[in-house]
Length: 230
Image 1: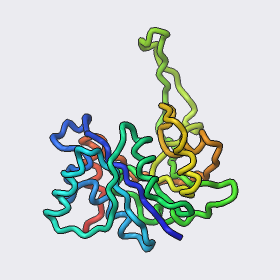
Image 2: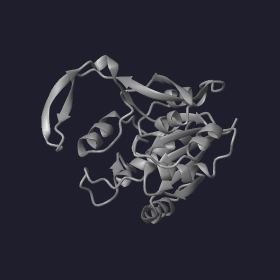
Image 3: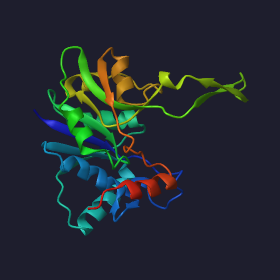
């Protein structure tokens, strides 16, 4: 079996208010993106890395890679105007009949045991993939808006009805590539929604509360405390 990891790193870090894209920010001595890539290269599975970067960020990565004499075999694919288009471009270099994970480049602390569980999950038949998700533990309220878009209050919802979806999301590459042939829709919030739109089914496994997506300065501080020592 061939294993591929499509790592999407297209963020610009507006909420970070940083001078560099958030995936290149330092996390305990290494860029967030490098730590994410190292998650997959440290597995006991032969995973081929496909790194998706905005064209304007490719030289940033290459400069860091060369400056630090890194040797991590990987393929760089220029990203598109949305995450959907970026993943679709990456899938062009993934063969049929493989297992492919699509992962956010700013999730650098996924337990390796979870990634291995997802990669080795039995796919086939009705099950075209598997995604991680965690239950909601806080109380939740839903915002309401009037027809003109102005706030119209909130109301409580049953938290047991909701889950927080994470990455990596792992699929049979043949069916994922077919699903990504569809025209783009703003309803495609992740790979699972793309698969659902084509009628494919997938399973859900328990994710990890350590699988933090770094989007704010507080996230970065929290990640630095959670990260195991090298």
